[in-house]
Image 1: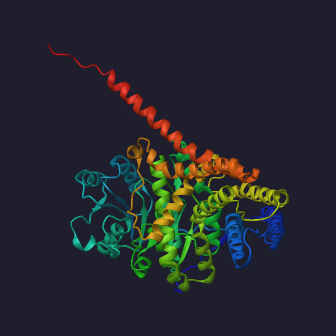
Image 2 (image 1 turned 135 degrees about the vertical axis):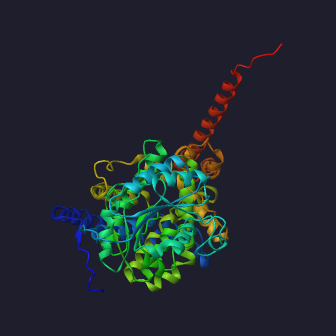
Image 3 (image 1 turned 180 degrees about the horizontal axis):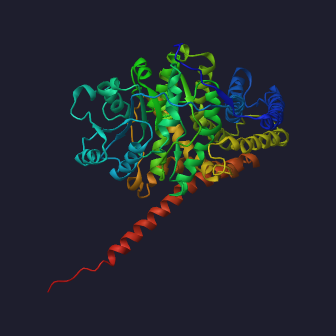
Amino acid sequence: MNQNSITIEKVPALNRSDWFQFAFLVFGAVLLTFVFALFWFSSAHIPHNFTGIFHFFDIFLFSLLSYVVWYQITNEIFFWDNILAMKKPVHIEPKPGLRVAFITAFVPSKEPVEILKKTLKAMVSAHYRHDTWVLDEGDSEEVKMLCRKLGVKHFTRKGIFKYNQKQGIYKMKTKAGNYNSWFDRHSKKYDVVAQLDMDFVPSRDFLLKTLGYFRDKEVAFVGSPQIYGNHNESWIAKGAAQQAFNFHGPIQKGLYGKGMPLFIGSNHTIRVKAHSDIKGYAGHIVEDHLTGMKFYAKRWKSVYLPEILAIGEGPSTWDAYFSQQMRWAYGLFHILFTQSPRLITKMKINHALNYLWLQQYYFYGLGQIIGILLLSLYFFFGINATSMVFSDLLVLYVPLLTVHTLMSIWVQRFNIDRKNESGVHAMGKLLSVAVWPIYFIALLQVISGRRLVYKTTPKGANGSSTPSVSLFFPHFILGTITLFCIIAAFYTKNNSRVLLFWAVLNTVFMYGFFFVEFVYAVKLKVSKLNKDAFIFKPQLD
């Protein structure tokens, strides 16, 4: 290491009291998980729908059911390990004289200038000497005028062939392509570049809080939480914010303790030399996740600062939320199948294992589809996925579920804003039920080789939209499948109360989302027709 470099001190997030509480909870959870595993994986629980060599299908069906049940349990086990590793960095004062650029990208046709203006004012006012830049995809005259007024530098790649390629690091109409173009043209003048999405308004100490960690010459980037400030805009915005609490709190703190916090594109500070070493931001629909993998494959270090340094806007409508989740799910599936096999072999073993764990998250949709498939096989054909007695299952599964719930409540103390991020998070859980069909569709698109076009999350006034019933056609189809399962039960006499309960639950939720949106759309249309009917139109003689 360079002799002028320093080592960043990490402080454990768990104090002595936390350790005892965590040890008690995790001991109970591990013990119950072990006992449940002994019960679950008994050969007596494999069904006997087929005989002879076809008994293989019984084993296959039991394996599918085991995947559905154990998907969440194994994710919890990785999460407990992550809690154990949680750390936070000790603040380091920035080195004087760093050449710093503060940049944000802007798409005139997709994003409001009013929000950009608010963000730029905050960027210009940030403490520590720096240049502020706008990377304007449209070369907008309005944006250039705003830049002159605020003292902000303007860059555009519009009309420059080199920076508008169909593929590669300068891919047209992509966030990564825009940033890489600016880096190629201007980054040589800087040591460090801080980057924000245009709706993320930074605090005045954003640079002072992050620049000091670059005293360690091996640090590639410094990240901070992606906090949504528009959670009161709609219940969808509130739910989206709630879903992020756990990730930006305990998960990112744990990953930092393991030396690998995820690279988040909405706000971060990056070393120019490290950016050059990995040949720029990855040209991908989730460029931040793949860019982070490239850093760790090159053995760069990073820092996660668990403080609110910038506040932005999350999705507030179904269209915006589903588009965001589709992009993330599609992107991680694509990376898992195409990039991970190559990159994880270059990482530290611990980093590789944790990336593989994180990239399993969106398989939640596949698990739900498998569950519906197993329900259909039972209600239509009487084919069971297991022969276990449900009452025996409840005796062991309910205590395990209870401990998991207690753990999830206890760990909220490590969220970024403990005062405002604690609670049941009902809206976030409801969104999780609504979004899993989107995850499955994303998986199908990746497997089929279909490309997904990058779509920015609508901001401000652009975020408002009329109801889109077509978004919920997958939910309608899935609800109809389990409705037919319920009807079939009365004819086939395959009427297990437990499986009927799950069929009814899925039907209620899937139909619920569809019909609520449908009724809202009808009401909106009727209201518009009534309004038009009462518009006064003067008659000419």
